[in-house]
Length: 501
Image 1 (cartoon, rainbow, N blue to C red):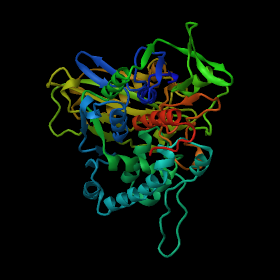
Image 2 (image 1 turned 180 degrees about the vertical axis):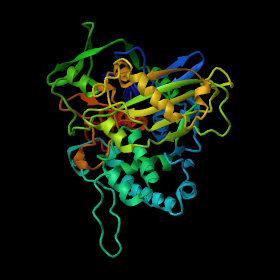
Image 3 (image 1 turned 30 degrees about the horizontal axis):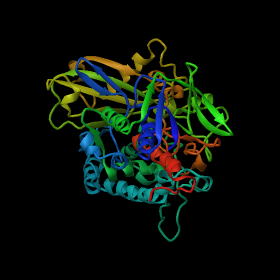
Image 4 (image 1 turned 90 degrees about the vertical axis):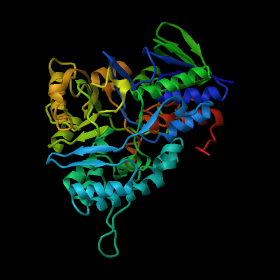
C-alpha cells in the first residue's frame, strides 16, 4: 500500500483518487480552494441554482465505469441522469431555426433537410461518417492509453479521411476544421453548425485540425446528458465516492513545492510550512502552477498545447414559467463569425463583438424557487483574462449586455421577465481554479503535428504523474475522468500498462 498525494480536487484529480483508493492505496488530496470540483462550480441565490462550469455531459460511460469500479452504487444510483432531447436548437442570423434530436442520425438528417434545404442533412451525415473514422483511429491511443513518444508522433498526423473527387483520385485531406466546413458543407449555416462545436470547447476552427470533426460525432453518437439539480451534482457524487473510499481531503491547503528523495517525488510542501510525505504524487493543476510547484518538470512525451480560451457566463433569474416544449440548449449563432474569432483568438483579443451564445434552460424544478420562475444560463467563448482585462470597469457589464441581447433570439420575452443577473468572467475562473487567464482546456486532438495534444501523464520526474484537463487527454468532463483512469492504471499496474483491457 502506497501513500499518494494528489494536488487539486478537480474532476480528474478525484477520478484518480477514487480509483487509487479502491486499489488499496492511502490517498490524500490537497486543494488550495475551499471546495472540490475545480471548474464544475455552482451559483445559488434566492432559490435559483446555476452551473458555473459545464452544463451538459457527453460520454457518460466514462463516469459509469468509474462508479462501477469504485463502489457498489452505480452512477444512476447516486444521481439522476437525464438524456436531453432535442440535443440542441440552433438559431442562425438569417432566422433559420432548427432543433436537432438527441442521438438520432436519421432525425438530424431530416431536421437539417427541412430547415436548411434538401441535401443539407446528407452532407452533414457524410461528414459525421468520416468523423467516425477519426474516432475509430484515435479512440484508443488518444483517449484510452497514456501518451507515449511513439503514440505522440503518430497522433501528429490528421486521421480525417480525404474526400474523393469525381474520378479515381483523392484530394488531400483539409488541414483545418474551417477548410472541412467550407469545402464539404458549403452552406454558411452548416459551416456555423460545425464550427460551433469547436468554439464551444475553446477551439479556433481556423487552426483546429480536421480531426475536430470528432466533437460533433461524439455528441451525436453518444448523446447529451444532464444531471438533475445541475452538473455540480456529478462533482458532489464523485466527492462522496472518494470519502466512502477513505480518501482524505485538505481544503485551503496550497501546495508550493515537491519533496524529492533519491531522484523521485516523495511528497508535497505546503504554504503553511507543513510537509506531507508520500510515495507518489499526482498533480492535477494548470501549467503555471505545475511550473511553480515543480520547476523544470513537464509531462513526457509532451507538446506545447494551444493556449486555451476562456468562458463568459451570465446567469439569469427570470419571472414566469418555463414554456412547455422549450429546448434545454439553444445555440444563437453570431452574425459576424470572422470578427468573433478574431476577438476570441487574435493576439490582441476583444470584447466588442457579437458573440455566439449558448442558452441553457433546464426543465428542472430544483434549479428555481418555484414553477413560476426559471433559471437560465448564457455562456460564450471569449479571450482569456490578460488578452482582455475582464476586471476593468465596464468591460464585463458591456459584454454581458451583448450576450443578453443575443439570447433574446432564444428567449424573446427575456427583458420583461428578467429579475436579476450575475456574471462570471475568465478573471473569476482564474481566481477560482488558478488556471492562467481563466482558460478552459480543450480536449486533445490528433493532427497539426501534435499542437493540440496535452502533456503526458508520466513526467520526467519519477513518481510524479499528471491528471486533469491540462494533461492528456485534455479538457472536458469526460476527458478529465479518462485522465484519472489513465494515471490510476499507470500507478496500479505499472509502467507496462497498455490501456483499458
